[in-house]
Length: 140
Length: 140
DNA sequence: CATCAATGATTGACCCCTCAATTAATAGAG
DNA sequence: CTCTATTAATTGAGGGGTCAATCATTGATG
Image (cartoon, rainbow over all chains, first blue to last red; front, side, top):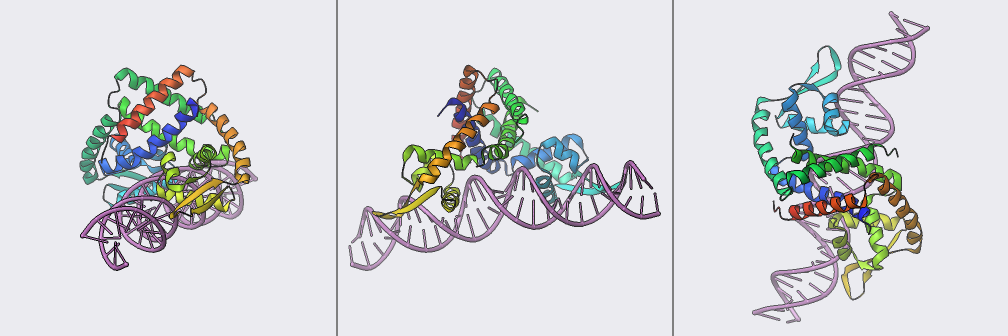
């Protein structure tokens, strides 16, 4: 198998190995933590805007937020000036719990990138961004 | 967000962007193509052994193979000497069709890794392998 | 040789994701 | 003002994945 092929396959393998472990270690999925993390930064935001920030499909965002609401982490309300829009924000309870989650996340990430120097991290980050850029230029 | 966090998120994003595009470009999912590709190399093999090669869950392998069998790409038979084991292999029809798929895959990969020199590819590949290694050492 | 453990495959329950269709509400054009 | 287009959110269908439980078969042990 060529190096190129191996790279693609390794990215896939890493994703598939990482996702379940991430969830077991942190108690929450990567996507949901991304959503919550964004909410810390921005306060209250429309679902649409949030979706654009985290780069997840509309449908997935709706489902995540509904379940996070059911768990009391998040609250939602309609925009009084435009009833199409739903605003989302952390509840105080959610805000408290998320700090612990972010801590677990940091520890997890540190293990994944163990023995990577800062220079190597920057190098890797740059290459990943280039790949994302290439992907954006593939239209079907 | 730290560089470490960005790296993890980028890997996730790449996977999520790449999977659907890969499937649209090649007409088959990455996992299934991996399975078929392995079958080219090894001829006939037990499902268990195949599963270990491609690093996918047992359950997923069973489902993929059943559907590939339904499409006439693959044939399965029990090991006469041990009825627990199921042997799998490509049908002649499957073998013919897979060449075209592999070609599409090569073109897709070339686009994803556009502007990456051989040295960069090697560097990236090494780093990805290191990450996989780190992941293996995380037990819950 | 009867019983119990290990193995391979399958199935069920559930999570995450995408695309496409639908619903509800607003904005705009005639 | 009415009719159409657009926009945000939701829902349904389906693909991919994992884990845990189950079934059948085989191996091993008392």
